[in-house]
Image (cartoon, rainbow, N blue to C red):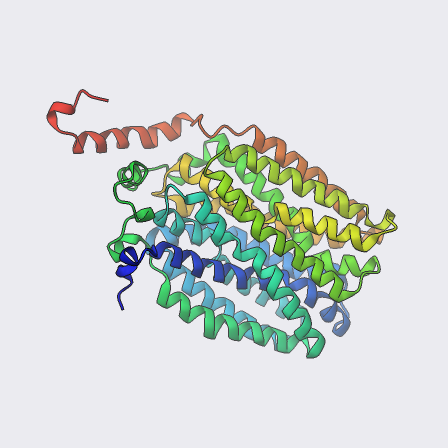
Length: 444
């Protein structure tokens, strides 16, 4: 049955696309955040320090960040679908090979391969795709797609913890490889479409919308990456992404083992980790909904403020008589701030920079996140190895998140730089003049 009937049935196919992106994000994020569950299992089997193993996770994050701009160029040239399915195939291969790894360098190499695969199927690829299917409800659609990330934390992390307790880490990696290679990859091939035009549809399923018509007129223009790099906006939002990655990596890499150090049982810690995902699902969608109606800049600053507050609460755990309750409070605050950064930032970038080169612009900006993640993961482990505590690392996360809130708060999305105006105003005026009647040439 043709998917073009979705208009008559009341189901816009764009929401099917969002559902597939949600699922991809669920599995990729769940795999990434499951590293905390694998962490102590690997340390028990191999004679490595925490910093040595965290270095493997850090290196793959840094390398994945460095190739993000290249991935963005591929998206602009070949479309999101081709890049995404290639990334999923690469991730599935890396996961299967990880189950046979025996040396530290194997983990360094295969974590890098897995991260590159997921990097080609993560927000850097999804954001340009969503922006072509949605205009008026772009922040909401981006937030629903991004909500797959925290859902992965909620669902995949406890499942992988249970698999590890019942079997071993080799089996757990093979389970993930089968899910990605035999379920997720074929579904992406069958469902993903690069634009609504491929199915004879319009963005938002509303060809008459002024916002949709404006996107059509600007689709072929927009800022180039070089022009975007000259704007304060790019670096302000990029700094926010760096801090987002730097801080979130504590949860993905060290949260569970930190909880164990403080006397919290492993399954209890996994439920706290899942709580981050559960709260983030609702918070991400809520912030996306609000982002289509209120100041995205102020909402994004609020998200970073909540992130900093979460790490301040976690820092208090060793000094608290109610450690489990404090851990869950910190997890709750992390959940509020967890998934909203990407949809709010991506909507800001699309509005400010246009959609013609959104793949390369957003991918380059998004590269700051894994670079921050790589540094944060290794630095936290190094701090622990030196002082025997995660305390200084948690305080640093609090300071950086608070600083990001202040930097983002100073962002003025409506005050485009001269480079933005030169890139968009003249082509937009030319497009409008070309479609206007001669008698209306002097009109508004």
